[in-house]
Length: 128
Length: 204
Image (cartoon, rainbow over all chains, first blue to last red; front, side, top):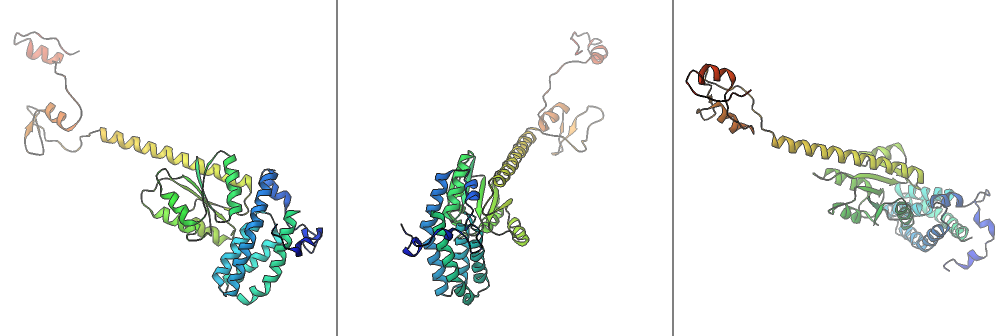
């Protein structure tokens, strides 16, 4: 499995945001696939496989200080995460996208570690 | 009904593909804007398309704009799929030539309802186009005579555009699809034919 060892040590609160609400909306996501558990599992698997690439692109755009690419990469990541109703994570990515749009790379760099942890938590929550 | 899904996010694309296939659509997939544009150029191109707003190479609104600019493009119903939902974005999206838009992540019932609207519009456009074609074909078959015709007050010949006097039946036969069958009316039978000692059956 692609998840790092740092994730395997996390217990079930990884599925929650700091205020205790679930990190993703399983019921909503299931409703969107008409209750098709197998399809939901397939979509989760696709996300887990695609996520490292999307995060890598985001990180690359930051290291190249490419605001336009940052906006685009964040938008792509947002679309993927949005499928799972992970609203808190989507909000963080949306902030990142806006920082890209307005060319505020410095602030985006500060936000990146926070977003990275949220994404790791989301990945862990999705496989539970 | 064929439907094009143009979406660069593989998860959204897969979800749309499964959903629309279940609903009975014949799904065509494009993973970026240029691919989508190529599908829309083909013969028998899909008449319904769901286009992601932000895609590599060519974005959704640009595709809408290019399609609407193209002369003689067949009826195609375009739905933009977007994470954006501010008023300006909606205005820009519809202004580019999209017929409708759906925000991501999409709501199934809403998507289904909006696709139904699309199908209804396409059906109406098709009926209208068929009717116009029928009317155009009918017009081609009909020849009309109009305007002022110079006619001889005595022999009833008509002067045509070449300044030549034609018998009225020749003139009408030349300028319309009407044809004549010849006979004798009861008045002429009584006043002309019988006094001359001939016999004929009158047209009753």
